[in-house]
Image (cartoon, rainbow, N blue to C red; front, side):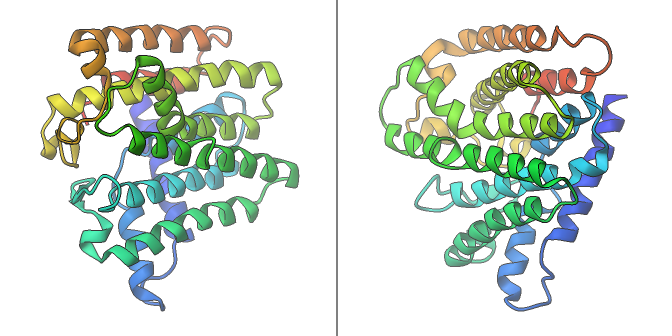
Amino acid sequence: MASEVFARWAARTEATLERLLPDPSVEPARLHAAMRHATLGGGKRMRPLLVYAAGTALGADETLLDAPAAAVELVHAYSLVHDDLPAMDDDDLRRGRPTVHVAFDEATAILAGDALQTLAFSALAEADAPARLRIDWVRALADASGVAGMCGGQALDIDATGRTLTLEHLQRMHALKTGALIRAAVRMGALAGGADATTLAQLDAFADALGLAFQVRDDLLDIEASSEQLGKTAGKDVAQAKSTYPALLGVGGARSKLDELAVAMRDALAPFFGDRTAALAALGELAVMRSH
């Protein structure tokens, strides 16, 4: 049942992205094509699914959730384009395809990332939603994307390359780099459903545990899965001497950490009970169990 719902939400996201992204036959055609290459036809769509799952759990109509779901995916896509650049992680493979700077060129990749980020905020500003809600969405996504979120976490990651971090520092880095955008996805959905402060806090706790679980699983997959399975280059963390959860805790310790986070996610959703949060719970399980 959950898989059917997720497929429908992913299709809604794809359709919204298709509508928002510029026509590749129109100038600057190369930039437009690069933006579409980075965004369409691949990826788990975890963040849009979280928007829909949180929003519908609180009674929001799916149509209202289309804009924030697409916006958070556009920011995620931009972050991957820039993360893959030679000055960053220097990767040639993403979602089973050449990365944007390989398929096009480095300058185009930089501009494509910039354009995807700004398009995300245009989508929110122009959404068919109350002005107060659009402002709250913009604030949530901006906070998660900037120096206090994803960009700050990426900077900490670069600074940490070749150094062994403490577990506390590693968790802080990933709470910003990976977790902040996941938290924003849940929050934007919840805001569309009219969540009060108590509900937002509870869902923030769920999202924080999910974001960390997603990263721990990512670290495990980097050493356990192949590049073909992942759709990106396996073994990059070890090659770049990065601190990871398996490196600090051991493989068994990292798996135990995943078990702890799974309990934390269930506890955060417990006050809601019933079927309302079934989709959120399923996404939490997916973060823990995913194979790519």
